[in-house]
Image: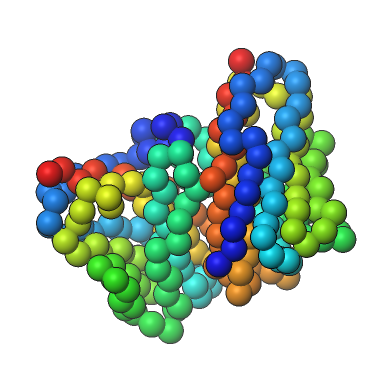
Length: 113
Length: 114
């Protein structure tokens, strides 16, 4: 397994601002994934972040809105840019262990006013 | 975290009964499946997994059944306890773009009553 620390755990932000979410893992991992969980819904994959390369985004998500950094094998950030109330969600960082099984952080509860 | 599960289908069971949570997956090429449990304010927690070359796998108080013919997955929880109350998600592993990624199902909220 892996221990994943995500910061902040929650935040309330104003419309038009940006928030950067940090994800720290206690071991080196190749694959890190960012998910969004809108209120009352399931998890949707935003992008996959590999160290040393640009993130791969899923359909409906773009780099300008959700820039991702992956500077090393234990850390990643996701920025939610130019926020609107529709961005209010839980954002979850996850890491792949044994390639397929994912472990998740506790998430960042974001509310945009 | 309190917003998780508000609009999801709910399964209500009595403490001590067995629970069965069902899931339909979409891709016949998926060869690996996982069940996750998500409690309020927490990230999803791994429960049990199964590969497509199996049709049943048992863990502690949990059993996963896989029917590839109809692309159906179920999670059985024996002797359900109040601590089992949570939202449960199935996920299928898809190989795309050179790596595996997990696609999550809609989720079911399990409510256990004393």
